[in-house]
Image (cartoon, rainbow, N blue to C red; front, side, top):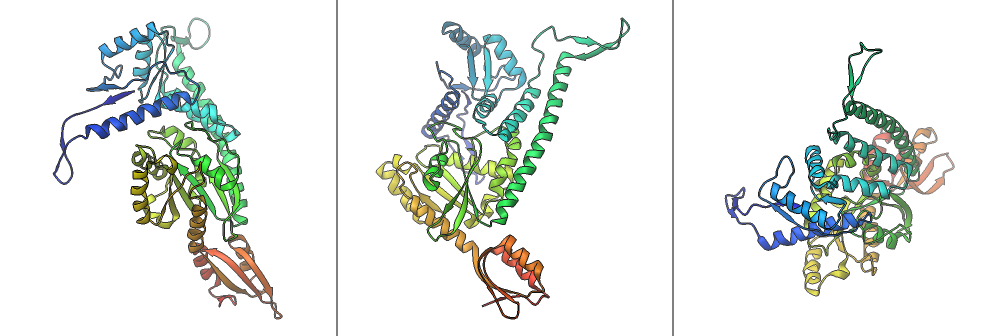
Amino acid sequence: MPQVKSGKARRGKDGKLLVPDQESWAINIEAKRQESIGLARAIGIEIVDARIVTLPRLNPSELFGSGKVIEIAGQIAAQDIDLVMVDHQLSPIQQRNLEKSWKVKVLDRTGLILEIFGDRAQTREGRLQVELAHLNYQKSRLVRSWTHLERQRGGAGFMGGPGETQIESDRRQIQDRIIAIEKRLAKVVKTRELHRQGRGKVPYPVVAFVGYTNAGKSTLFNKVSGADVFAQDLLFATLDPTMREIELPSGAKIILSDTVGFISELPTMLVAAFRATLEEVLSADLIIHVRDIASPNSEEQCKDVEKVLAELGVKVGELQHDMLEVWNKADLLSAEERQHLQILEEGNENALMVSSLSGEGVEELLAKIDEVLSSAHSVLNVSISPRDGRLLSWLYEHGLVLGRTDQDDGTMLFETRLSAKDKALLERQLHGTQSAIVG
């Protein structure tokens, strides 16, 4: 993987001199190297060599300097390598030039992630989303690699002028396919929206798991819900979202949602393609951010997740109690690291240390979810006049009706559980009617 490194000191916003931390830089780069290896292994690629290439600057034509290109070409020929993965975003020109120089297939980070997603997608929606992202990626990669891509003759007979080039033809065919997939996806999105509305009529709060890929989300999801979602020490082990109904310690029921894992430099086209799937996060009553707290890159991974959430429209800083941080893989921590994190945990009411493997902290997590959701909802007694049938329908649609008593005068007394937002809506709906919140 290439890495541009500058050893020069610089000044921060406060004017203080900032000197590069060589040790932390090395740890961070090694973690990135291991992530690159994990990405390649995720689709069964056999790793012959994985190296870090430090570049004084980026070469616009081949990314690497000419000497490094020749050096790698020698290794490719000597070891009979037929695929080179560059953990960096390559321009179409850079990819074409490297393939010419090395005479092998070259895959950049975006292309590899697309391959993984294509391999993991199981549902019809997932496969369509991956194909859409792949086509958008291919469309940008149409560069003239072969001399036979001449213009096709247009018109009839010998008088026809030059027609479209092969590249233009390929681009048109890809664009036609993109339009067809977008139409099919629009129908699938409508179906998903209907399903979401259906769940809204059974007003169980939705709790969504998000996190960096391989943070242990699916393992924790299985531990909490008793499900059997595929979970393995593998980047992007699961792709399609899974939802399960579970019961909290108080007896209240919730819908638990496991979503696709995030990663640094997640291709923009994938974020756009999977927006419909990730809308489950936007509509969630509570977001659980699962972090691999044992990873040396945990803080950077946290920022990457927050960045993707921001792209989806989730503003982390404004969520307050609507997001919990779960510090997973506590079983991998040393005694000193655990002690340090326990001190931090005590000072953060929205953080909880767990181990999805051993089950440590899972009961506390369920209790915390119960507490957060209970504080966000209130139980009300609502008296509805028989004249206000519209309110009766609204109450069943938006609230969880816990009990109903019919009075002799036809008035109905409901015990219902409502979110703070729906409570405010109800108060506005009651204005000017003979119905009211009582008690």
